[in-house]
Image 1: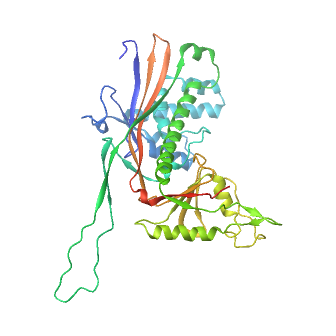
Image 2 (image 1 turned 180 degrees about the vertical axis):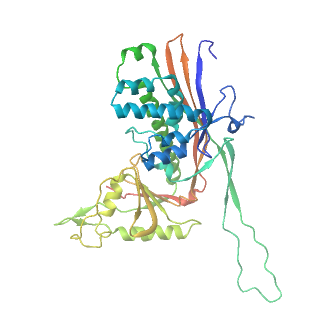
Image 3 (image 1 turned 30 degrees about the horizontal axis):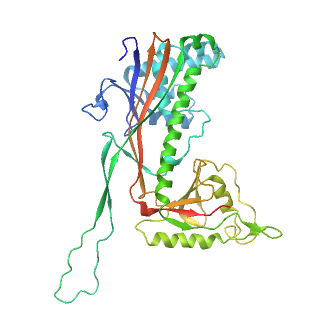
Length: 379
């Protein structure tokens, strides 16, 4: 390490319990390093729950910190509340740039952020498996045990053995960093730009993980195509749908009947969902029926009225504007997550401060027979 550099506030997030711990940057992950035995700082799950509850107590989030860090958090959040109450922005600015707050900044951005970057919802589709060792195997069992009918008298059935396959799992490292120079801090007045960049970096991490899920789905689904119909195709006066969406749904149900899974998920860009719910066969075959609402459909999940038990995920991060994807989300794929590390590096030689975060995440399709691409559902 550069002798001039100072590494501050190294923290590591445990995906299993959502707790942020003190980290030791001299230790390498995957080796004999039990970072869960180090000092706990902050519980991201409690923090997010406190934010969603929108409690009247401004210090509610400070209860998410542990030990000595709890006192620092209570002090900072109390001062922030006092600054907000008094409308004195200079007090708030002083707190944000204080030495104590840098630690809270490094931890809370791992737990929550509020910028407007589109982060995607694709990581919500598959179950998340905690992978602290970054490697392992995932077993997928086949349902090929046999039950024999009409066994002759005095005969006993021969045993049948269910088969299974293994997928080797290795969780790669991803990362990003933002930096600011000492001169930039002096020149820029007002909002703490560096803190904002740190928060945005975390959102870009979440967006990157959504893209990883998307790429895994699109890569495997292309090997299993089902022919669709254009939900939005219309003609005549008044314009009416020319394609029967119900027939397609019956075809997809039949497809899953021949697999070991169940049809419980549809994934597409948002406008494809719009065209589906506005298809006249879905609306009951009458163009005079009231239109279904189509607002707020980006990065949303909802049920499909004509398909009980099926959830439709809409995310414009999906590449295709003509296809959608169907799957058994419980069995087809898994997200594997290792620890997330973060720290700040100050270098007086180059007069810079840099925030670094590194995460370990991978999506594996463990049973490709349970994902299919439905082509041509939009023109």
